[in-house]
Length: 285
Figure (spheres, rainbow, N blue to C red):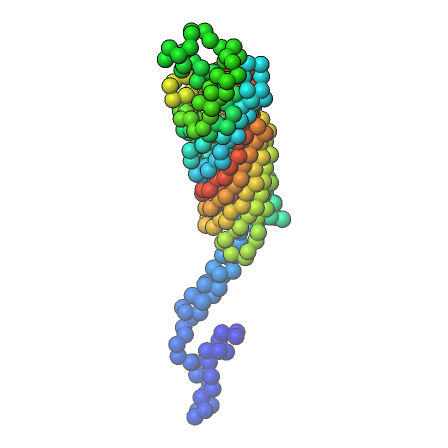
């Protein structure tokens, strides 16, 4: 009614109501349609409850890993830090969204990184590699053990084993996570979110020295955690379904796994934590 009134006027000359130019029934229909589209565009993919599935991929920027072991009979303590290459992470998830904005989901996460060097502050059993090198060069008798050497020679081999050492290796992680996320209803297709999760991760590492000596080839299953945030954009589909594309950030970490070293046969620990930056794709039913 108000549109019709706005489009008509009484002629001052004849006193007859006349139609104002510039609008037609077709244009009114277009305006109404645009208004309805504007209103409907505020519906988030998570504005109503329902199941969803998704996949994601990201660059994995792992922090350097602190590698430690206590002093043992015959060897000093181990204190080193590995330089980890930028890796990748892929994940799949399935969950349920509630009208309140909360989502709960299960996630499977796989990541892989290369390891190319290690900064050694205290060599631990790695000092054996320096002693074996001296034996190979004929500087020590065959079968010489580090613990048998005078303290002055031990100190010299300790210094030789310190510093930046080239290694060739990689590690991978398979994690199973239970996550809780919260989506902020912005009244538009843009959906910011925050969240986090707990779970377990099996971490496998395989590395050798520059000379080809195996340093470690082992795995361990430990507690894992993550927190994250991001923003998605929803593309509505028919029957209330939708696809949301998101830009994601997350920080993940694990309890320090324990691995058995191949040089000494003794255990050592390594810290695992870092950041992911990537994209996700979620299909809401």
